[in-house]
Image (spheres, helix red, strand yellow):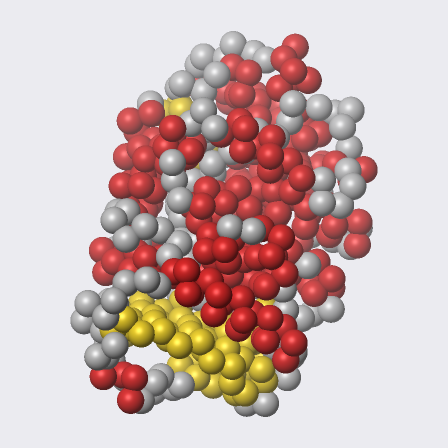
Length: 407
């Protein structure tokens, strides 16, 4: 899951605005914006350790044009069949209400949130005309980092990976986290992000939540969408600070993390702890409508949504080593989810927590659910099946094979 518009850079303003107040500029024209970009480029290059190969364009856009762009990117990223599959999965997991329509919700929330974006196709920064002068330097500096990243890694190839949600989420955390960290010295040269304590950015979630409370669309969006927008910026920034300490002088873009587990637990990245690949066997029990994975972070969000306790959710998701789910059936009403764990105790905790969570999730009649601990290819695993009681697949459940990971 987590498939939001990846190239639309929603900017989280983390720097105390009072510290930037004397630097606010009443910039109106594209010529003035171009001059701002030109002067910011050397600082962005210095803070990222990467030099610009070319200067990006910078253009103004109306809020209507921003919305049109977001609609185009969402529809490009999620064509109708894929959108339907993802929406069915989110509903089956209980991450969005059964009545929520995903596409208009995403469009409304992102239109409200986007303060600027970088488009790899046109090598241009797009700045909405209604961005306040106080925010302008934040927006431009953040999107300028994305323009620089695109000169070293092909952003579209990262953000358009299909059916690889967790890997995409990890990559997005690097791209957004690096932009957050790099924009700080641009805005406030006296601030040195490398001196921030590890975990500092994630601790700003309460302040960000208070800042977002006045934004109507964001405030009423489901937890999955709200937290999915925040995580890449804050969780990613913490990983970037850790990386700069651990691998001084190296570029994170040359060795991107492959899972949100590695973002949440950087020691797993340092240990080259790669996620286990879970592959469904051929000969499915029913029509596959959608297939993807959650990853550790969205597994945590699932428990947070169903059990309402963030600390418990974090504990239950820790030890994740891989997962894969399928949405099946002509009505997209069957969910089969396999997860693999570092060890048997982690699998046991997860299975017990999932059993409790699902007991709260499923009160409707006519359905059957099963949470079962398994051993697959000598690895501890857990399988969740939630389907109509009369589903024919109960007689021959889909199976999976494992590869990689902590074998």
